[in-house]
Each structure stands twice: as C-alpha cells, then as structure tokens.
Length: 400
Image 1 (cartoon, rainbow, N blue to C red):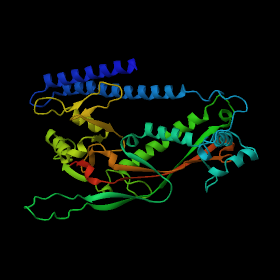
Image 2 (cartoon, one colour):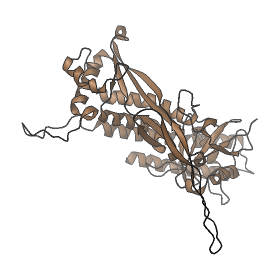
Image 3 (tube, rainbow, N blue to C red):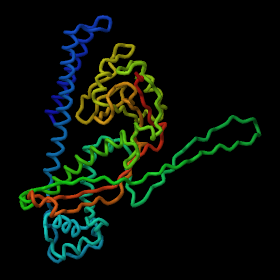
Image 4 (cartoon, helix red, strand yellow):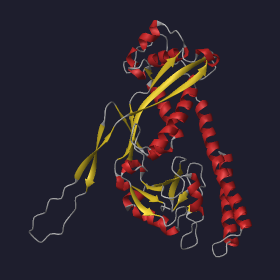
C-alpha cells in the first residue's frame, strides 16, 4: 500500500508541475511546438503513473485473495450432532465438492453425479455452487466498472417488471376552505429480460492433473476478465439486440443535454452546462464517465478562478475528480470525434443490472482432446437498462 500511496503522491506532484509549466509557457492560450511536445510528455507521465497505480491495486487485491485459506480446519468432534441449519442445495458443501470433482475428472463416479442432479441445467452443464457464484460476481466487478456503479439485482427467471415514476405529484396553494386537488404520482414500467453470454475456457490436462493448480481461482479470473469486459461494453454502448441496452445508446432515452461547439474539443462552459443539466437530487451521487483519451481534454480546462477542473486522486481507493465528482473511464465509450456521444454525467444507480440466478459450467472432454486440453463452457444470463432516463445526461460532439 505504501508503494501505491508514494506513486499517487508522485503523480500528484507531476500533474502540478505540468500545470505550472502550462501556465508559465502559455501565451494567449497557445504553446509553441516545442513546449507543446514537452507538456505532452509530462501529461503522458501522469497518465502512465495512473495506470501503474491501477495495476498495483489489482495486484494487491489478487495477492489478498490468493492468500486466503483454500480449506477449513476440522473443528468438530467425531460424531458431532448433525446441524439441521447447515446449507443445502447449491449452497451445501456436498454439492460444491461434487461440482469440482466433475470439473477435474473426466470420468466422475455415479455418487458424484448423483450429488449434482439438483444443479443440472438444460444444456448438460451444472450450476455453480453458491460460494463460487459469489466469487464469480466479485471477479466481474473487478473487471467491469459499471457493476461498481449500477444497481445489481438477482432474478429467478423470466422478464422482470420494474415500476418507475413517470411523473411526480405536486402541492398547491389554497384559499381558506378550498378543497385540496388530487395530484398523484404516475407510474410506468420498465421490463428487464435476460440475454445469454458465454465463453469457452481451455485448460491443459497437465494442469488439471496437478493438485497444486487452483482451478477455482483460474476459472474465476478468466471468467471475470472475458465476461466482465463484454458486459461493460454492452452496458455502455449495447443496442439492446441480443444484448443489454447501453446507457449511451439512443434506446436508453438518456437525454443529450449539451452539444459541443467543436467536433474534437470541449470548453469550460460546456462542462458546466453538462453538470447543471442534471437535477440537483441526482448530482449528489453522480459520476462522469468517458474514454480515457477524453480526460486529456478536461485536464486543460480551468474555472473562473484559474483552478483546473480535473483533480488527481491522493488516496488509494478514491478516483480522480472533475468539479468534485468522480471520473470513471472505459475504453468502450467513444473518444471525442464528430457527432459522437462522448461524455456522460449522472447517477448510475438508476441503471439496473439484472443477473439471472444460476451461472453454469459444462466440461467438454473431447472437443480439444487432440491438443491435450479440456474445455469449460460457461454461460450466464444478464440484462441492463436505464430505468430513469432523467438521472443521466450526455454531452455530444458537434457534427462535422
């Protein structure tokens, strides 16, 4: 942690030096070619240190996870009374033990297969044990920033209807003795379904037969990386056809509240217009989302007092900020270009991610046998949708 904090402090000092250089060398808002090149190098160093901080955080989280005990010590006495409150079904230790035996073994015993009958899916795979389900969800959160910001729910099956307020009631001034008029909330419904997302993970026979190989950690890491990045792409720019509706897609009904006067640059006034286009109740928990390359445009913007809008984080778990609101970046949000929707600002807890209960794995013994590998087909069902469009605003670039 000390290395991370030291690097963050170094990054903050480097950014201050870059700002001072820009203030010193800028004449009428312009830099010479040589000074512009120097400033770009300084800014690149700031960005590189930010990436290194993120990498060290991920490494620290992984080290912490791998340091956890892989089994529990025996603490009960022999012939201890049976615990009637012990987990059952997919949450039972018996099911989890049988599940991983099937994942490791090409020819599991009948007893093992019988123990898995409660978790057999329609495609010949097995639903993952509850404890491993939580591990997979955590892996998704680490690889998908959207899950950290959205409202994640779990559904049992089928479409879920979410009631939302379409319009609000109001109060009225009254004459003495006059009756109070009715003013009711008008409710609508948003339907969230479940789209299928899958991946194929291949593991060599040698690794599977190595008792020291932690198959759970490897599958969780690969599942989180592959599925998490695909989810993030859909939650931002998905078109709703066979995948979730992204928050930047027109079908989300999020309002384009600001259109920039340039196709490739933004101004301080446009940033402020975007900020104040969001109603104050939603600004309390609002965040900026944009491509990492877009942050560069914000780094040069100043307010009326000459203070930069972008401020680097000084603590390990806190993101950088713009106008004192956190910034989150994703490579799936388009960079600034003519006509694109490139910057979003809003409360993403009004974007609902619906996980269908029960992710499944299917071991494929023969498909990759010629290469000395075993395939593990993993599937899940998920949907995402902005349930309250007024909670999120978008800045769109000028069309060339």
